[in-house]
Length: 267
Length: 265
Image (cartoon, rainbow over all chains, first blue to last red; front, top):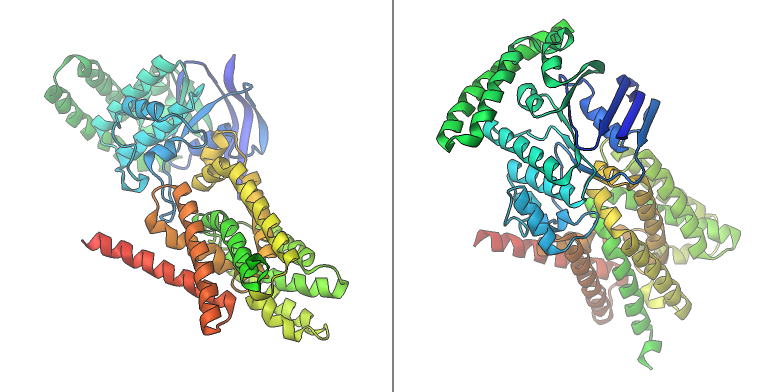
């Protein structure tokens, strides 16, 4: 049975229909990624699924007692609100300090517990957010653009971490990204969104779908293959090797980005 | 017994308000609801006029009208972007309208200063009981919802994902705000209630590493300001409410200058 399912979901805010007629479901242990250009309603879909936006049409069903670990894209903290990492990880539910320490270690952010949130770098902050979500012991981990502000090796490391978490916790993972190639190969299923669902399925199938190519151009197909190459080697080879791959990878990423404006004009 | 003295009653009344205003004031600061608090407090003057006209208790009138204002304001939003001027309109209209309405009542003109700036030295045993019951209610409500309030204040989506309802948390704060206004009007008056809410938490910010610490430090600083203000009022014969607020302003200056000095070294 699926953890969350949506049927014919549409969300309208401020008179603008952000998503319409979206069918969605995710089951335990699955990694599903939603891709789409800017303004395609990716974040709107996520926010509707976690209950932050009321659907204007269609239905959302959540499994009873579903625990969601949510990692927002960014978190603006009022400078008057003092907050250490450890305290933040205990919101809304307090946890023993050993558990907080273990969660920080797991996401590669050991030793940050006593630091004020405001002092963290982008990558550290992302990890703290992830650790907080894990402490909720989630059935479903929801991440909005988790690699914003990370470089290519950083993104690749984060996706590997997410795969490890899925293995260990058995939770489902729902991600949103506009960073196509890296995300896609780390996913079981990809949903290509542009207001409505353009196409969905296994990463290979989506990458070769004409709807997907119309949105993102065909340059990204090569990038997907390249990433896989990088990914396969990274485990076996020494660090400098992986780093070299990361460089070529980064190059292709900028290429994919350059394709972006053209395809948006087409739509 | 010393508790029977007017000064002891004044101190207890002031401490009661300071202890409730500190945790609530922290949320007012974190959520940038200062103008929201201002509108709610100014509506109290209208509440006084209403209570006098209907010959009911002042505290009931203040609570009713302040709550109505707080609910109105919270329904239009809270995070002061475009609603900033709307809140200003509501706050000052309520104050002006209240003053006009009060002027229709004969014989209360002398009391007006007391409602605007407080009359802490005239606090009766009954007032004291009302203040402490109201304050205890506010502290209990905030303590009960603390985690949810804090999560919703940090980020609404995080709250939703954890199954919390930010709108409900906001309603708790709205209710607390009206309660604090109702009990604080005797102590610092309608014009300075926002100061009691905002200045001690703002003074506590540089001394605190966690939200809980900030609420505690704010309560301590607020209490110090109450006692120091009363002392100054007694020794120099200054008005008590404004003296208390001046004392907390001094504490604010001290903690922030101290923090700036510590950063320099």
